[in-house]
Length: 214
Image (cartoon, rainbow, N blue to C red; front, side, top):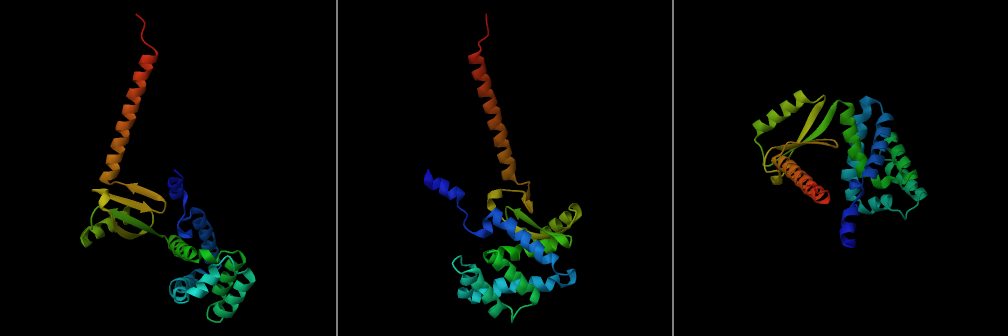
């Protein structure tokens, strides 16, 4: 029982922690708000390169930035000596803000949210379309056109495959899922049958509890 509870409550990483995601989005918005619109692509590229190119090449530096043992002053010194000479003033200042608030471990999450928020501000949003099997390019174009006509923003369609869907498709926009798959319809049918059975059982109990008088 304890093991089952541990599996249910364990958060594998900050990338999957809802609270960490909310905090990362706040910092992502703060970074975008601090930069003029025309300069945002450059800052986004700088952040993305630092997270995905620089840090993986220097794992010890990455460990020091994300360590809870290393103090804030030491992290600020590292940023000033290592990052500042090679980065823009805006990016360096942002890194120092994260260091002062002990949020450097959220860098990958912040990087992801910066990209997403930039797309949203530009009238675009990512839409994940999951089908039971891979679709042809023609079908994918038809899906993209249909979504573009139906949604109040420009969709950036990401296709995925999940054989468990059986048929149909599942469309995810942010935290909202529009599930038109056969699996979803079968589950809805199962739930209706269960509800009906529960109602019939309860009705039978009520009849036994209150027998009709002769």
